[in-house]
Length: 238
Image (tube, rainbow, N blue to C red; front, side, top):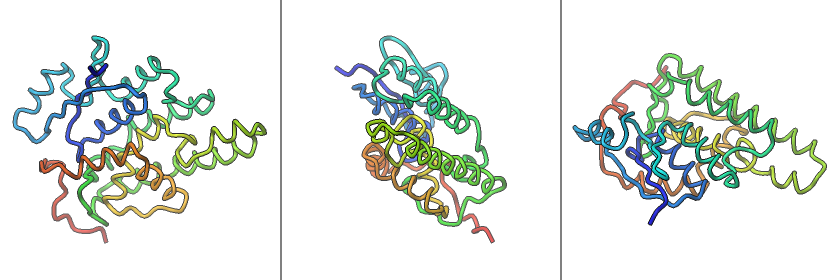
């Protein structure tokens, strides 16, 4: 019997579900998955039957109901400290929490005009007001983290520590920060956002990791359509 239950929305559309799912997978917790189709007429009632918050994801573990993705991540990090959801280094850990919190609370223009849609391809669409500014800040975060990782590896004299910090993710090895930004990477692919070499390398690492590919495979199988999350015949930006 699984230790936990995770309630999620459609894998094609639900960015917050993806974040929570990646975190639970990284923690190595066996879990049952309940998927609520966000296109159902009664999806809100379905969600309310699992959590008073009425949102996804929701983690049920040891009789506890944990909702909101960052809360799920922090709960898992405390309960499974060896899973490495946050970097071991205190400075890196603080930075990882900061960029994750910024992802959690910001970038409303990108969320609104570029909804996650793994099945779709909409190059040059979704560039509504404020989207370019959101993209600029997100890619700045990615570049800053990759530069910081390079500087850190140069400064580390202990070979074992340097190897432990190697990798193409924001803090070397995969962490909760990458789970937070994975849906954005997917959006950039869907909407054909051009990236510089540093950011493209990071995006390729996320898209190529086993956990994301597992989610993507299931998302591509879904036949449901949620009209609110589909971008229509919007004219391309001039």
